[in-house]
Length: 148
Image 1 (spheres, rainbow, N blue to C red):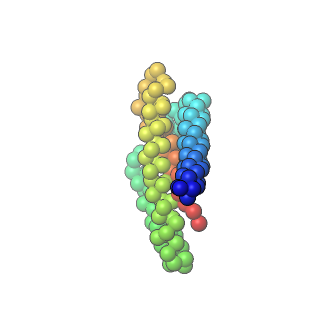
Image 2 (image 1 turned 90 degrees about the vertical axis):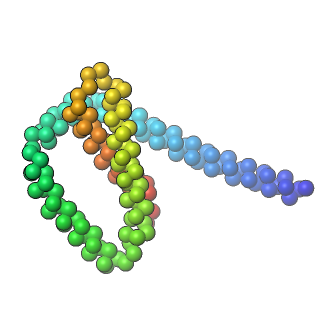
Image 3 (image 1 turned 180 degrees about the vertical axis):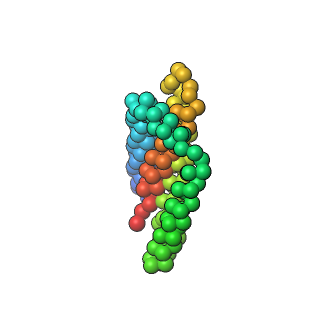
């Protein structure tokens, strides 16, 4: 009977530690989202100006810039993987998965916070906030999921 009591106490302590850990992580994430939303609110005029500058560039210029940049990044990653065997199959894959999830989730959160906070909805600002919050969230979650 004492083995059951010892086991119960040991398991209760273990579960309490895990619950405290994940609660603190969740609270940190919620606080981070709140700070991020507040920072977006503070720089909303700057975001409008930034978007208007980016929107003035024609779409074909973005393609002309994007294709060579994609080729160079792909080539670099391929060469790096050749020199460091299996690097992208283990740690980086988890980091990229977290990064993609963070990219999508942070974009949604940024847009939803923007819609809740502002009284005058501007599609251009909404798209710019989506991009900015997606990039920041994707980078953050990539490093959260990457464990070398």
